[in-house]
Image 1 (cartoon, rainbow, N blue to C red):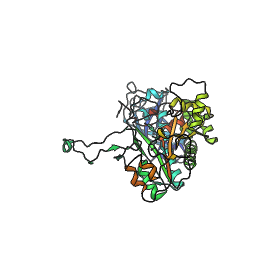
Image 2 (image 1 turned 60 degrees about the horizontal axis):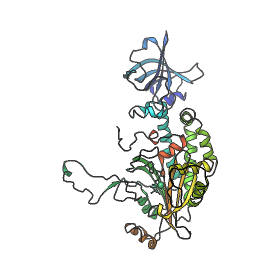
Image 3 (image 1 turned 90 degrees about the vertical axis):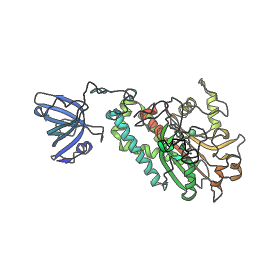
Image 4 (image 1 turned 135 degrees about the horizontal axis):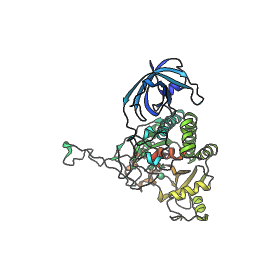
Amino acid sequence: PTKLRVSQALSGAELGSNIKVQGWVRSVRAQKANVFLHVNDGSSLQSLQVVASSELSDPLLTFGSAVEVTGILKKSPHQKQPVELDAKQINVVGECNPVDFPFKIKERHGLEYIRQFPHLRCRTNAFSSLLRIRSEATAAIHSYFKDNGFVEINTPIITSNDCEGAGELFQVEPSGPDYADGENFFSVPAYLTVSGQLHLEVVSGAFSKVYTFGPTFRAENSQSRRHLAEFYMVEAEISFTQSLEDLTKVMEDMFRFATEHVLAHCVEDVDLFHKHVTPGHRDTVDAMIKNSFPVITYREAIDILRRSSERFAFPTDWGCDLKTEHEKYLVKHCGNIPVFVTDYPYDLKPFYARDNQDHPERTAAAVDLLVPGVGELCGGSLREERLNLLSARLEEYLDLRRFGSVPHGGFGLGFERYLQCILGVDNIKDVVPFPRFSHSCLL
Ligand code: 4AD
Ligand code: MG
């Protein structure tokens, strides 16, 4: 027999052939003469219907068990599925006691329930759809950058810098008998990266357009629906920028490209979310793609917040950091589509953000992209390339500016927040295979 993935079998290409599929039983139904199975192998949301004569039935053939089925692929007489496998042989490879198995046949378990089983949730429809979408969105982001002349740079995961200066670092130290005396392996304190920006800036000084897409670590001590200790960030850095528009254009184009790609390539998986998991969210996604993203300044944002009748928990004076509640309000105010907020107070942004010297209020050429349901999705800025202005701020950064320094800028997009945004998922822990957050490092 030809070994096929379930998705290949479902495409109907091998009709009439003797094939073998391997997967996990999603349903079992016994009738007098026949037993019907649905077998899923993660290659698609759909399972393959298997029809076997009762002699092939086996008490171990239960919901959740792993099986190998060999038989002839036939056109199905049923409307609901294109093909079925007429089984000649069924092997139960791995038993599963359905009483102990935390998921029950034909039940739709909520994201919160399945989150308790990090080792099993990929066996549910919702989470397997999520992982396929995540994989496709990753591919889309890489192709966006490739198509637009960016070079991918693998920035280091272990680093001695705290790019954001927020002090949310995980320190890296060797362990094991050779290092019992607390020997300092790198001779300087080393950390897991909070951002690849500084390394990208270095390479952008020779390549003009670069990006990185990798794991990022922050010791955020908050129990929040949009923060993880380990998350994936897409970061781009572009040289010879003239204004923030050079950045907002890339952010918006990338967002639209990746989202359209996912909608086109993961139709069933996205539908599962938009119809059953987060009903109604499709309209939001369509509006995000159709409309161009408005741009407002931080000053305008503050004015909007102050004029609103909403009671905010946090203050809304000039100089205040925008909190999630403010960001969500601004998104609603702008029509529930992504909105860029630019020109933040200089003191709110990290040392590298470029000083807008012409503003009466002291601002930096920084921009955040706020999106429905999530708030901040991207943070970016023009970088301070003027040595004299920077010297007051940071000694170490200076050598990056001494040799052929050009105006440049970049941004970072939180990939998990992006998935939350397009799927309408409320909790960031539901869009990552194995979430890490404070007091939780399961599996
Ligand atoms: O705004 P941030 O901190 O920007 C930077 O790190 C810049 N150095 C990026 C750059 O310009 N190259 O982080 C960027 C994005 C945020 O907008 C948010 O979406 C995401 O990363 N993010 C997190 N996502 C999940 N969990 C966390 N703890 C996150 N912290 C930031
Ligand atoms: Mg930020």
